[in-house]
Image (cartoon, rainbow over all chains, first blue to last red; front, top):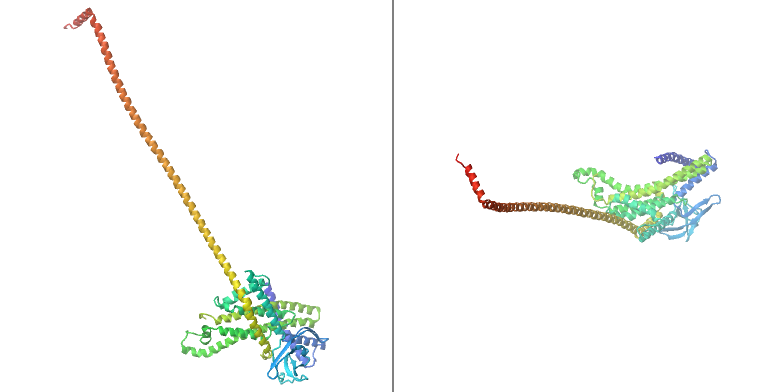
Amino acid sequence: MQSKLAIKFLTVILFFFSFGLIAQDHSNEHQEVSHEQHEGTPEQVSLKTKIKESINHHLLDSHDFTFFSDSETGKHYGFPLPVILWDQEDGIQLFSSSKFHHGDAVAENNGKYYTLYHNKVYKTDAEGTITLDDHHHPTQAKPLDFSITKSVLMILITGILMLLAFVGMAKSFKKGPIVTGAGRFLEPIILYIRDDIAIPNIGEKKHRKYMPYLLTIFFFVWFLNLFGLTPLGVNVTGNIAITFALAIMTFIITQVSGNKNYWMHIFDPLGNSMPWYGKIPLYIILIPIEILGVFVKPFALMIRLYANIMAGHIVLMSLIGLIFVFQNWIGSSASFVLSFAISMIELLVALLQAYIFTMLSALYFGFAVVEHEEAH
Amino acid sequence: MEKLINDFSFGLFFWQMILFVLLLLLLKKFAWSPILSALNDREEGIKDALDSAEKARLEMQNLQSDNQKLLQEARSEREAMIKEAREIKETMISDAKEEAKTEADKMIINAQAAIESEKKSAIAEIKNQVASLSIDIAEKVVKSELADKDKQLKLVESMLNDATLN
């Protein structure tokens, strides 16, 4: 009960603070536009803009892995990653991201020039000129970017970790019925996913087929969410491309495994409860809604995960940024306490979002394979 | 929405799809299938063990109840035997008593009869002896009486005197 109260209290505080932050961000923008005419010394403003930039930078994927940067010397501590580009004219281009010098320089490869603009690769000339259109989008051509970015690297690392953990667990099961090592911790989670997510939603008979997907997606999302909370500063599950890929897989599996009942529910939702001439006027409205629902479900999956992780990162980083903005004992320590509390909540959110994604995927699979029409 | 589309990176999507599907297939083959089947096997094993334990318990119970029954039977048999023995003993005793009594009665009757006949014969003997003795005595008396002729005559006299016709 007390912990619930504490969470409520924190949520309320967070709510007001986040508004404050948004307001601050906006005021920062105005200040930038009006050449810092308003309150605040230039140093403070530049600190705020720096924090904002650093948050924005953190939220985006990047072509090199930077742990931290020293803004005074302009040095970045990290390592470059391979850039792989493809377009019809030039074919495949492969070079190290160190050529970009963290976006400061024009990369030359095989006589072609590329530059980074807002973390996206554009073709350019030797001077790196970028011309913007009315919507502030560059007019230069964009090659397809298959680079091994920070997120791709983290996906690879997570994948390898999962393989190590679970193949090791499988091996330890070969020796006897009692698992050893990390499997002891993972086993109850696997059992939970099977007994409390898959079986109740999909059914005893059919859940087996979907278990590998549900387990993989749960641990994948959870591990990446947790990685996002480490000081490595990766934001993989808060990236729309990742959540889109995950949601589209759930969508495809749902449609492929959809049986007669599933499609009947979409195209004939009322069944035999009404004569055909009564159904027609209703179906003009109902069928489009049902079809829309098919697409809205994975879309909601995608947005839910993306927005939750994204928001968590923004809030957490803003609170950490506030420590430096306040620069006094009370404000900074309050921000520290708050950011600590939010970190704890984010740990919970990391698990919760993985659970929700898995749970809803299982629910949709359950809809797709439902055996008998239940009364609605 | 525009920000979402702008943030969408096709390359990242491409890699995510490829890596995730690869991860899914690898994990399915080398991890999930063995883990899930091992968990299943273990659960089945536990279930079987519990079932057999339950069966053993029931068997045990049956055995126990059988034993109880046997014991009960043995006890009742023993009781029946004891009862029978007691009855036999009682009948034997009573029979013996009866027999003894009839035998005794018979003996008494015989004895009485013997006594009676002895008594009769004794009495008859005594009578005979008494008769012969009295005859002897009488003979002797008569003899002696008749030996003395005067006395006889005197007696006849006296008697004749007494027998005077009054």
